Length: 426
Ligand SMILES: [Zn+2]
Ligand SMILES: [Zn+2]
Image 1 (cartoon, rainbow, N blue to C red):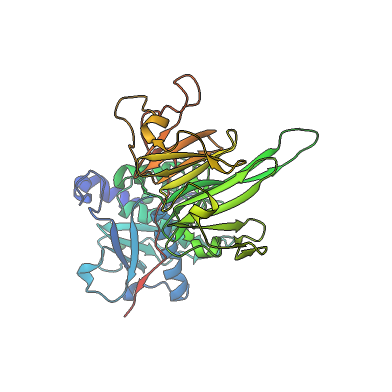
Image 2: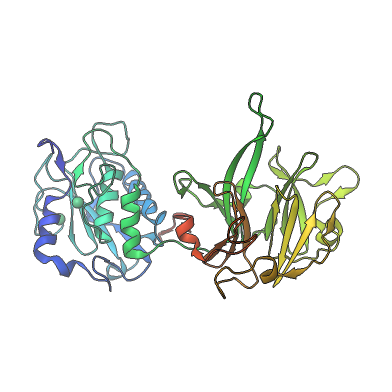
């Protein structure tokens, strides 16, 4: 490595080597905290001389938020509680600072260190900046790294890891990479469900002379009045999610929905949300629910009127485009509904276990599903309940047989319930 690269925190590493196990306060090696909700404070006597206080606090709050986006941790700024209730204290200082046994070394060299459990010191002889384009030392980048340490992470080898021991000489990533994510999850676990409903928002397009439409889709996970947009290629949600349902889906009932259906065939193209005994038609072009559709239809409507033979509240529902039918789920029962003829198929409702038999005996959700999700990314239907999902087989193992259960968090990563940044500031 280039000798000119700046060390993040050489002294912290020395400290950790000599004191080793005393670093860990939690029940697992490396896990610094045994709880998920942590309070932090920028010490009153430890503000930077280079930046306005609000910029310092905002950069630090954002660094905490980044970690809470990938692990079941929440961080709250607290500037008023007694000091012994604060889990993570941060302060800037120069030379001899903040009662710390380790001196800072002036400009260059060491940028910051973790002095004792729960304490982060930043060398204020560095030209700290909050602008990524500046030539200074980016405060967000340093805070991400030091918070990683304070949470119990060692240095990591991936060049894009924020826990790489060398501060990037050219504009480093301000994002946690896969190695950071996996390392923090080994200590604190993965974020887990349950979810109210999961669906792909499908758009059809035609390209060139192809006869089959080109399918584009976006994946959404909904819980209560919040939602995540999931990036299947990156294997993580969009940055900054979850967002409020109200923001992204105008006109939905408050508190969340039971199901979403997008019915599309050669002559039908309609989207619906279901909640309780009612349903709303969704205007995909205007991105809001229909209030009224012509003279006849006013929304919300009663499910039993729009879908004869089906009564809410439903657990969930899914439209299978290839079979041109809807499955409605409620308790232990399933209804298969023909969308063209608008009627329930003969013999339904049937029991969930009859329609979707377990491949491995007893490895089955039995009933009361949270979601039935057709994933265009996996080209497969999943039944989801609580923290688990079952993929539905289409071939060899028998039509509709349920594969052994997997954790939802293994299939779809990092759907973390990040709370809007909150401050205790009395
Ligand atoms: Zn370090
Ligand atoms: Zn120090």
